[in-house]
Image (cartoon, rainbow, N blue to C red):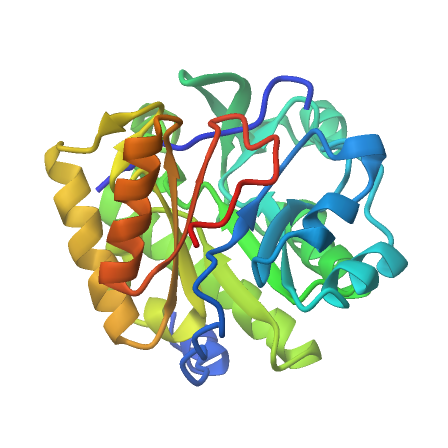
Length: 298
């Protein structure tokens, strides 16, 4: 079931399944939660994240969300603070400000499909096309590996729900979901062939666990708005309960659940943190803009 996704501001299949199989991720040794910041790094540096007590951080591949890539020495320093560091990027969509967008629009325009109504600068793509793998996904994974990230945090698996079916004749939602699982499994197999301990963590769409090979291919899952929608709105919709049930199933399968809720009222922050402790999730309560180092629940 679809879950809303918070984003930065404008400035800003059997062989694969077997190859991607891995042992369950080990829980991180901290109850402080995790860090999720995709923009507004002070002075373009990661020092503030390094000083924070949380033991896992998700940051963009680039400090400017485009082509100013974080260097290996910067990622090494952040990891040296005791953190596991994951690189954020999209696998089912592309924004206008990403460096790959212009070349794709120029000579592979058929890869770019319908605009995402919630995010007018973003478009869904033919994520099953080999050109998408060769020109966007594989280079991003390679960049994360070279920079020294501990893994990748993969946004927009929900593309399978949002693609305009009129633009992809013959495709169904079931087929699109299976293709997304195949892409995630391919990322997992490719990265782990180079670095076996590399983490693969998709964001949202936990229902994909019902497809063969998905659970084996991932180490954890990021889930937005399990308890509070942006901002300070209790998540009471049916999909909230469905996502929570899927999150529990993945947790029980040995996967780390990274929950992120959007709240500012102290009572709501405390309530979200209480849910994380009860559910044994790593959690963070932050801003929809993902532009700051959030305080730990502890």
